[in-house]
Length: 47
Image (cartoon, rainbow, N blue to C red; front, side, top):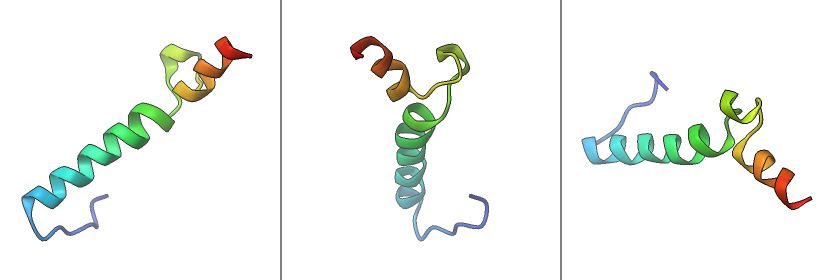
């Protein structure tokens, strides 16, 4: 992420928000969920 250059501060904030909300919170394996993604964890309740 350090090599990305943004034209405006607004563009940088949007990029960081999307990274956190989409990757970090939803796709990344979470220790508190038994090293599963939130989607994998939720699937355990529906199967």
